[in-house]
Image 1 (cartoon, rainbow, N blue to C red):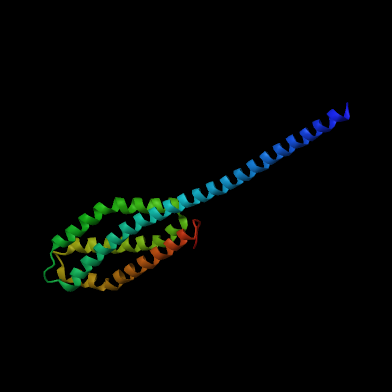
Image 2: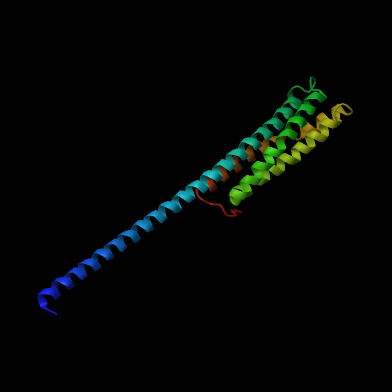
Length: 185
Protein backbone atom coordinates (compact mmCIF):
# COMPACT_ATOMS: atom_id res chain seq x y z
CA UNK A 1 0.00 0.00 0.00
CA UNK A 2 1.14 3.46 -0.78
CA UNK A 3 2.48 5.49 2.17
CA UNK A 4 0.39 8.46 1.16
CA UNK A 5 -2.78 6.37 1.54
CA UNK A 6 -1.60 4.22 4.46
CA UNK A 7 -0.73 7.04 6.87
CA UNK A 8 -4.11 8.82 6.60
CA UNK A 9 -5.98 5.49 6.94
CA UNK A 10 -4.00 4.59 10.09
CA UNK A 11 -4.56 8.10 11.44
CA UNK A 12 -8.30 7.79 10.74
CA UNK A 13 -8.40 4.38 12.44
CA UNK A 14 -6.57 5.76 15.48
CA UNK A 15 -8.96 8.73 15.60
CA UNK A 16 -11.99 6.41 15.26
CA UNK A 17 -10.70 4.13 18.02
CA UNK A 18 -9.98 7.13 20.25
CA UNK A 19 -13.46 8.48 19.57
CA UNK A 20 -15.10 5.14 20.32
CA UNK A 21 -12.97 4.78 23.47
CA UNK A 22 -13.98 8.28 24.58
CA UNK A 23 -17.66 7.52 24.02
CA UNK A 24 -17.43 4.22 25.93
CA UNK A 25 -15.54 5.91 28.79
CA UNK A 26 -18.10 8.71 28.91
CA UNK A 27 -21.04 6.29 28.86
CA UNK A 28 -19.45 4.22 31.61
CA UNK A 29 -19.09 7.33 33.79
CA UNK A 30 -22.69 8.37 33.07
CA UNK A 31 -23.91 4.88 33.99
CA UNK A 32 -21.88 4.94 37.20
CA UNK A 33 -23.26 8.37 38.17
CA UNK A 34 -26.82 7.29 37.32
CA UNK A 35 -26.39 4.13 39.37
CA UNK A 36 -25.25 6.16 42.37
CA UNK A 37 -28.20 8.54 41.91
CA UNK A 38 -30.61 5.61 41.67
CA UNK A 39 -29.22 3.99 44.83
CA UNK A 40 -29.48 7.30 46.71
CA UNK A 41 -33.02 7.84 45.45
CA UNK A 42 -33.99 4.31 46.49
CA UNK A 43 -32.44 4.79 49.95
CA UNK A 44 -34.25 8.13 50.34
CA UNK A 45 -37.56 6.55 49.36
CA UNK A 46 -37.00 3.67 51.78
CA UNK A 47 -36.21 6.12 54.58
CA UNK A 48 -39.36 8.12 53.76
CA UNK A 49 -41.47 4.95 53.93
CA UNK A 50 -39.89 4.02 57.25
CA UNK A 51 -40.42 7.52 58.65
CA UNK A 52 -44.04 7.43 57.49
CA UNK A 53 -44.59 4.05 59.17
CA UNK A 54 -43.06 5.37 62.39
CA UNK A 55 -45.19 8.49 62.17
CA UNK A 56 -48.36 6.42 61.79
CA UNK A 57 -47.36 4.24 64.73
CA UNK A 58 -46.49 7.29 66.85
CA UNK A 59 -49.89 8.81 66.14
CA UNK A 60 -51.74 5.62 67.07
CA UNK A 61 -49.75 4.74 70.19
CA UNK A 62 -49.76 8.31 71.50
CA UNK A 63 -53.54 8.50 71.04
CA UNK A 64 -53.94 5.21 72.91
CA UNK A 65 -51.58 6.27 75.69
CA UNK A 66 -53.35 9.61 76.02
CA UNK A 67 -56.65 7.77 76.40
CA UNK A 68 -55.16 5.72 79.25
CA UNK A 69 -53.71 8.86 80.79
CA UNK A 70 -57.06 10.60 80.69
CA UNK A 71 -59.06 7.75 82.27
CA UNK A 72 -56.38 7.45 84.96
CA UNK A 73 -56.56 11.22 85.54
CA UNK A 74 -60.31 10.85 85.98
CA UNK A 75 -59.73 8.05 88.51
CA UNK A 76 -57.32 10.23 90.47
CA UNK A 77 -58.94 13.65 90.19
CA UNK A 78 -62.67 13.09 89.71
CA UNK A 79 -63.26 9.66 91.23
CA UNK A 80 -66.45 10.79 92.99
CA UNK A 81 -68.04 11.79 89.68
CA UNK A 82 -66.67 8.78 87.75
CA UNK A 83 -69.26 6.35 86.41
CA UNK A 84 -69.15 3.09 84.51
CA UNK A 85 -70.00 5.14 81.39
CA UNK A 86 -66.46 6.59 81.31
CA UNK A 87 -65.01 3.07 81.41
CA UNK A 88 -67.43 1.88 78.75
CA UNK A 89 -66.50 4.83 76.51
CA UNK A 90 -62.80 4.15 77.11
CA UNK A 91 -63.21 0.48 76.17
CA UNK A 92 -65.27 1.24 73.08
CA UNK A 93 -62.87 3.91 71.76
CA UNK A 94 -59.82 1.76 72.44
CA UNK A 95 -61.44 -1.25 70.79
CA UNK A 96 -62.10 0.84 67.67
CA UNK A 97 -58.49 1.98 67.58
CA UNK A 98 -56.89 -1.47 67.98
CA UNK A 99 -56.96 -2.37 64.25
CA UNK A 100 -55.20 0.89 63.33
CA UNK A 101 -52.67 0.50 66.13
CA UNK A 102 -51.93 -3.09 65.16
CA UNK A 103 -51.69 -2.22 61.45
CA UNK A 104 -49.24 0.59 62.22
CA UNK A 105 -47.13 -1.85 64.26
CA UNK A 106 -47.07 -4.32 61.38
CA UNK A 107 -46.12 -1.64 58.86
CA UNK A 108 -43.30 -0.42 61.07
CA UNK A 109 -42.06 -3.97 61.63
CA UNK A 110 -42.01 -4.65 57.89
CA UNK A 111 -40.20 -1.44 56.99
CA UNK A 112 -37.66 -1.14 59.81
CA UNK A 113 -36.95 -3.97 62.24
CA UNK A 114 -34.69 -1.82 64.40
CA UNK A 115 -37.30 0.91 64.92
CA UNK A 116 -39.95 -1.73 65.64
CA UNK A 117 -37.74 -3.43 68.24
CA UNK A 118 -37.26 -0.09 69.96
CA UNK A 119 -40.98 0.73 70.23
CA UNK A 120 -42.47 -2.75 70.66
CA UNK A 121 -42.07 -2.74 74.47
CA UNK A 122 -44.21 0.42 74.58
CA UNK A 123 -47.07 -1.38 72.84
CA UNK A 124 -46.66 -4.36 75.17
CA UNK A 125 -46.90 -2.07 78.23
CA UNK A 126 -49.88 -0.30 76.72
CA UNK A 127 -51.77 -3.56 76.09
CA UNK A 128 -51.16 -4.71 79.69
CA UNK A 129 -52.37 -1.44 81.18
CA UNK A 130 -55.33 -1.35 78.82
CA UNK A 131 -56.35 -4.85 79.86
CA UNK A 132 -56.21 -3.90 83.56
CA UNK A 133 -58.31 -0.80 82.95
CA UNK A 134 -60.93 -2.66 80.90
CA UNK A 135 -61.21 -5.49 83.42
CA UNK A 136 -61.43 -3.01 86.30
CA UNK A 137 -63.99 -0.92 84.41
CA UNK A 138 -66.24 -3.94 83.96
CA UNK A 139 -66.18 -4.47 87.74
CA UNK A 140 -66.63 -0.77 88.54
CA UNK A 141 -70.32 -0.79 89.49
CA UNK A 142 -69.94 -3.91 91.65
CA UNK A 143 -66.74 -2.96 93.51
CA UNK A 144 -66.14 0.75 93.00
CA UNK A 145 -63.69 1.32 95.88
CA UNK A 146 -61.51 -1.70 95.08
CA UNK A 147 -61.36 -0.74 91.39
CA UNK A 148 -60.35 2.82 92.26
CA UNK A 149 -57.59 1.52 94.58
CA UNK A 150 -56.27 -0.86 91.93
CA UNK A 151 -56.23 1.78 89.23
CA UNK A 152 -54.70 4.41 91.49
CA UNK A 153 -51.86 1.96 92.12
CA UNK A 154 -51.21 1.95 88.34
CA UNK A 155 -50.55 5.71 88.12
CA UNK A 156 -46.77 5.22 88.21
CA UNK A 157 -47.02 2.65 85.43
CA UNK A 158 -48.92 5.16 83.29
CA UNK A 159 -46.27 7.84 83.81
CA UNK A 160 -43.56 5.30 83.02
CA UNK A 161 -45.44 4.33 79.85
CA UNK A 162 -45.62 7.96 78.72
CA UNK A 163 -41.92 8.53 79.34
CA UNK A 164 -40.91 5.25 77.71
CA UNK A 165 -43.09 6.02 74.68
CA UNK A 166 -41.41 9.37 74.07
CA UNK A 167 -37.86 8.04 74.47
CA UNK A 168 -38.55 4.92 72.36
CA UNK A 169 -40.06 6.98 69.54
CA UNK A 170 -37.09 9.34 69.65
CA UNK A 171 -34.64 6.41 69.45
CA UNK A 172 -36.62 4.86 66.59
CA UNK A 173 -36.62 8.15 64.67
CA UNK A 174 -32.86 8.40 65.16
CA UNK A 175 -32.36 4.83 63.93
CA UNK A 176 -34.37 5.60 60.79
CA UNK A 177 -32.57 8.88 60.10
CA UNK A 178 -29.23 7.08 60.43
CA UNK A 179 -30.34 4.38 57.99
CA UNK A 180 -30.33 1.57 60.54
CA UNK A 181 -33.01 -0.88 59.45
CA UNK A 182 -31.63 -4.09 60.89
CA UNK A 183 -32.00 -5.36 64.42
CA UNK A 184 -30.49 -2.84 66.81
CA UNK A 185 -30.93 -4.63 70.12
